[in-house]
Image (cartoon, rainbow, N blue to C red; front, top):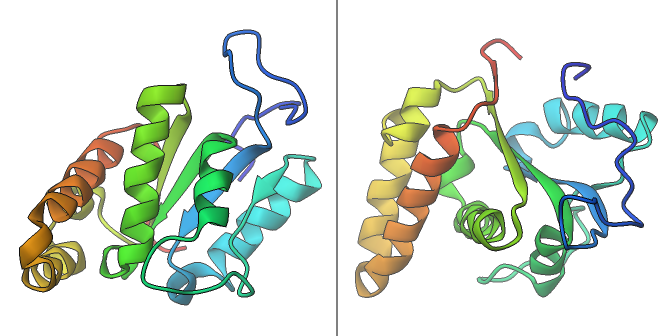
Length: 171
């Protein structure tokens, strides 16, 4: 991941262009079953070797139906979020809740957000086609009483998919 330039990002002090202080340089949002032990693990190791303070969800965080307060705090305290879109990313309500919160932080705290498309077509994310379309259709059935949540997820997918990022078709 040498093309990601986050030179000397200091997590202990705030940037002169931002009024916020950051706990982490980077927050990684990813679907564990797709990328935890391959792409995301390698990316995290590379960032760590370069001295970039990165938050990665470990298997020890408590699982539940709602996104954990630990993750919300980590997202809010990160200067940059890297969203690793993979085949099953949108099937996880946890990932979609993270994504919606990241978009909030982008708007309210000027957090930098970069998508990484790992073995998925960016247009499938943007237009909710393929596995992304199937996942959203399932969520629409499961969240009939909370369609606003699904609409937030869809808008977040479109917004991030329209950002400049990286596409790794073959890993």
